[in-house]
Image (spheres, rainbow, N blue to C red):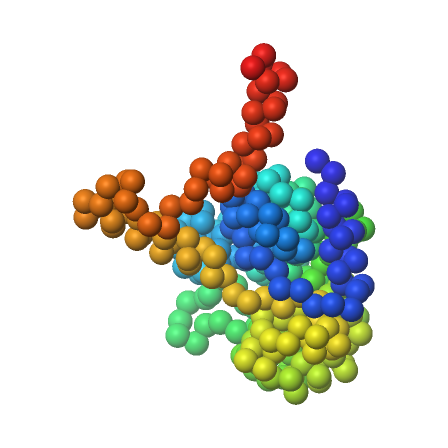
Length: 285
């Protein structure tokens, strides 16, 4: 498939002046619903991937091939640019190169590479960040592996919530100098932190959002182009499955269930009309 158009749409968002909330998607059906609702960007996180594929918490147990396969399924189902969380690139800088190639092939429009020391090592004190030098090398490796120049490579750090604002900005400056297209600050909470970051780097910013960081107009003025709101859709889906199964287990009749979508809703989400047309055209009705 040709993924270039949606990558160019994402680059246009980065070059614009508005900030967008992405739709947190985790499978083809959620992706189609997001598109039907008019979301401009989709977000596929490592945490939601772990829940979807493994039913496990976000402990970096998912493999690159599992993540890329699910990203491909999502991209094949809708036409919205997809930003994905590629964690630490599944290893060192050489692993990062393979991660970029696999996710580029899977159709993602943008991917983030973070500088967290992952997976967690042995011992209570294990964890933290890799050095800035190693982080910058990972960013350069990601850029070198990219084949489609429209694919967006995003540097990412949790330093702002783990070490200090100063450390986070130092990392952002180093990764921007390495050539990343945008930078994702995880753990940013205040306007003062955002203003310091926006003054330090001149590339687009992505944030996870804090209590002071909800005004899209303000965020747009500080070069924030994507602001995550969390990953509630998959949590809500899990609750809906639980409630429906429990009701059936407790003896509620299927016709009396609440919260079940209409046939028309499911037909739209599954693109039933398209499949009916293809059936008539290619299978003789």
